[in-house]
Image (spheres, rainbow, N blue to C red):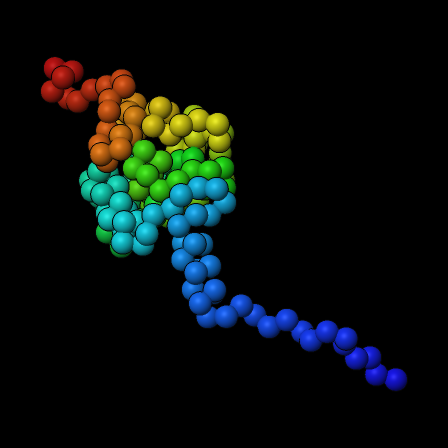
Length: 158
């Protein structure tokens, strides 16, 4: 005895509907606004330029001194799973090892400002740079110094 369906199987959505769904998916995901690909690329390069080609975390021993433009990773301080968006205040240029470290050691990363709590606004949450400066990241991809560096150079010590 073979079973027969009483209603035909539904086919997938037509090409127009698929294209509309793809376009919608690109701009809004899980309640947060994401940027179009061209703007994301521009923002990534602005974050890289703000860092001066250096890893803004430098949390691991294997951290390279200079990051090639195509080798840095874009870390979201307020995690995307917690509603963090693509904006300069939420973005940090890091090397691969430091990116892994930040996600594997969230308590230490939060203490340094590499990870921001889900309830916090990244623009108001300070980041500790490798040279000891405590800064806030601004929307125009610059640093707003909260506290100056605590390290001294040989010239200052003399």
